[in-house]
Length: 186
Image (cartoon, rainbow, N blue to C red):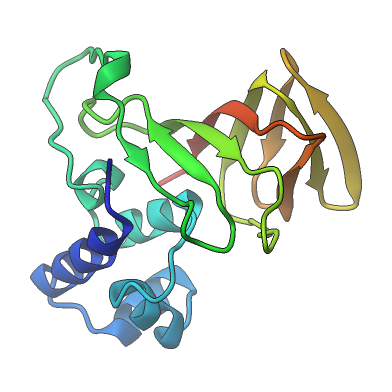
């Protein structure tokens, strides 16, 4: 399992290696200096889409931020037992992400298994460049995209413009588990 407390340390180390100040990273990402400071000091646990934006701004990979090693190869196999869990259960959102392609070097898409909790304390709103795919593996969720609302059940798939504010919440008493792919352009 990937420890969330390590993410901030890796982000800070990467920023320092690049010789960037918090202000310069803020300018590259559009996040505030204060928010980035909280992320680096593990007082704020960012969603995966934010981590992807930070990785791009730092000219590194999400896998490196997660502390994973990438192999230079034209193909990658990640066995079920090799998946890494980005634990979110201690945070207000309760989201959980499992990496499914962390071994592939210099990838253009970030695939995960996303688990939405039944009763989150807060519901995050996401918005970032690129596109996303959400394929529901288990459960049912209500998905909001801009001013539109969708009921998405097991076997259903959403493909959407991620620059429009979006989020999902569980419907019913069972967690929703989705295969998620995030694509962010260079």
